[in-house]
Image (cartoon, rainbow, N blue to C red; front, side, top):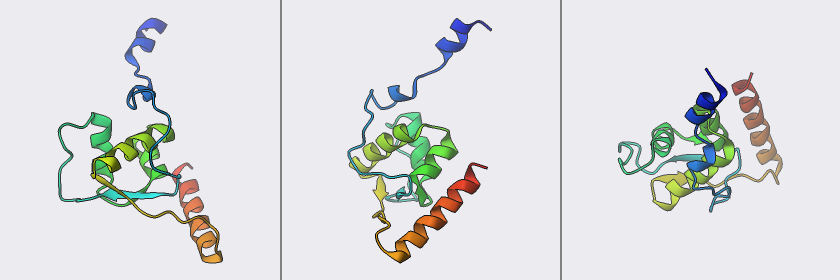
Length: 119
């Protein structure tokens, strides 16, 4: 297969976000997200990538998990999740900051979980 054909069949990830690289909500890799109503199907008006994110978030997941599971770059997932939150389709859970000892333990557990995902 020629380089031209391979290159033409790929879609740049940032076309999904309209070229935007920043989300409107502060989403860190450990931020947890879930659908506002897990019993609903993904709205048909959403782009396929946003529908996949919506369906995956029927169970609470971290932003990093969504990115890894769907093999979509983290920055793109952050923007798409932010868009879904603006539509009221996704709930962004409060994120811990690691300023207390107990929060540090949670962050360490999250890091170990992410390391297992990428092994």
